[in-house]
Length: 179
Image 1 (cartoon, helix red, strand yellow):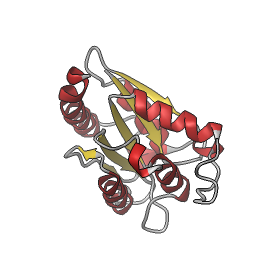
Image 2 (spheres, helix red, strand yellow):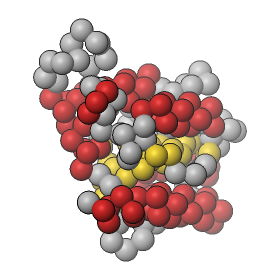
Image 3 (cartoon, one colour):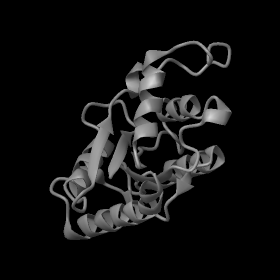
Image 4 (cartoon, rainbow, N blue to C red):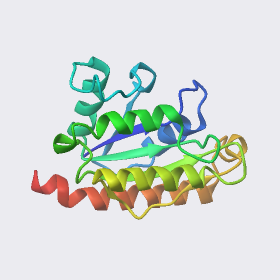
């Protein structure tokens, strides 16, 4: 089983990219996490050009299409989804009839420097994914004070992340078995 990991941050030292890399170490046997790192390459979504060929957009769509499930780790900017992540979701949602997220199991987690662990951005991201037709796994993981919680990760964080991954894998199993 393949899980596509998408970090919603462009920052090289992103806590959310670190959270995805930690998730990779906690996966059950037979499951791999492949990190998609093309967020910076995507053009701004524009309905006037959505039918034109955009190689970075096609790479995103192919990565989502080839995955059995998607794990998004998002920071929170001004109480919401980072613009680059929202842009990627907008591109992936088009064309509507070929939306690569439709029916795809997804989980949204997040980390931030502040106390709340990007809870609003996670809720907004789940809302957008739901409107796109994705299957949101019943997962909540907000890692506040990420600088200290991730280096090194404590047992509570590791346990909660492992549970989130198990839930996503369980959500994806029927999907991958039918393929």
